[in-house]
Amino acid sequence: MVTVKEQPRSHFEHSNGRKKSNSRIQMTLSPTLQSLMLWISLLITSGALAMVPISVIGIFIPFVSLFAWVALFSSMIITMYAIAWSSYLFVAQQDSSVYTSLGSSSLSSYVPFLPWTPERCFKVTLSVCRYIRTCAGFLWLSIDWYFQYRYTCRCRKAGLPVFESINYSIPFSHKKLDVYPAAIEQDKNMYQEIRGSPVVVFVPTAFFPVQLTSHRKAYIQLALNMQQLGYCVVIPDITYYPKDRIRQSVVDLRLALSWVGAHIATYRGDPSRIYLMGTGCSAELITLTLAQEAVVLSRALSDTNGSDEGNNRFRKEMEIPLKRTEIYAPQVRLPAFAGVILIAGLSDLIKGYLHECELGVEHLSFLHRWAGPQSKQYLMHSPTHLLDYSKSIIDPSFLPPRFLLIHGGSDGYVPISQSILLKSLLQDVGVELVDLQAFRDMTHADTLKSLLARSTRVAPHAMTVMTAIYRFIL
Image (cartoon, rainbow, N blue to C red):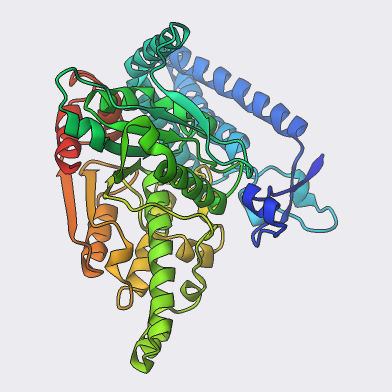
């Protein structure tokens, strides 16, 4: 009934013979028991949902209405619990230390991790319903993605590939990235052809289901849209939880960016005009990767100067555990970046986790399992905390000179306060340009739709968002 599972080790750390500091042994329910309980929960959910319309009809039938009201109330309660339990059985069984046993087996090892309070079940059910409604809003985009994917396949068969897939992390792994060379115009002058096109590296975000949303092929529409604007677009595959934790995500991103800096000129891209772009969790990953490098290099520079005042100030600012900040895979060199575009980006992991707790989805979200789960790991992987604690010693020359932050005022998943805080900290450390573009009525789903859609009918903010990006990229 119980399966012993060892957390996977980083590909990069395998190659160096190093052991991950956060690897551990977990006791979890066996897949057979978990699947059985999930199917039972889904059957109960279906039965309870079927009882709702029957109970509503029974309310209008004489002598049956009293029993119908009881049946309606009972079926709604059962539905609420069944949906919440199905969600937990599907994604949250490795989430709580209360249900994790190290060493000998215990009774808790045989009990699934489930919500029991009505308040928790109501929040989970409400969040699941919102998620389903959001997915329904992507129906037309999913149909358009299918036709765009078929278009790229036809072009490849005709010998005119729209993009090229390349292994960027050999020998550490077999991760790939797709390169979309900029569209060539007939009247383009010779100077621009020689100089190359601006390069946009879009880092895929991750949300349920992670294996689908984090795949590079899920963003074909975005790549084709930006390719038509004259940009060379690169979309790499990045490792996210449950395959590995944030350390490997940073390593993958550094390897991909190193490849871009070294080889993008081959695809008519300008290595001096590389722009990073991400949304949601990928925006956090980008900011963390840049902040790690800036903090560590600034710390080394402060130590080299040998100033007692500077060293004392550094020791005061960089408190435990932030003084342990390191560059993951420091041997991988990053190119210089012309700018960074963060769309509905997460920047403060602590506040992000607390917001998930308010929504009741902290056990369903992969965020704290990806970036944590301990509080000191949250601090080390939170870009705003790194910038805040090191702002007195950080050298802004180690950060890109220009940042564009785009956020929706109606974003209920990643509040706009995340971008406001990041803007303030970037300005405090001396970044040359930090522009925050806020859209009052835009939700979190609208931000992603604005990047994928080609029509304002599907995404009302698509034109304004793409215009802001176009004006930012030099």
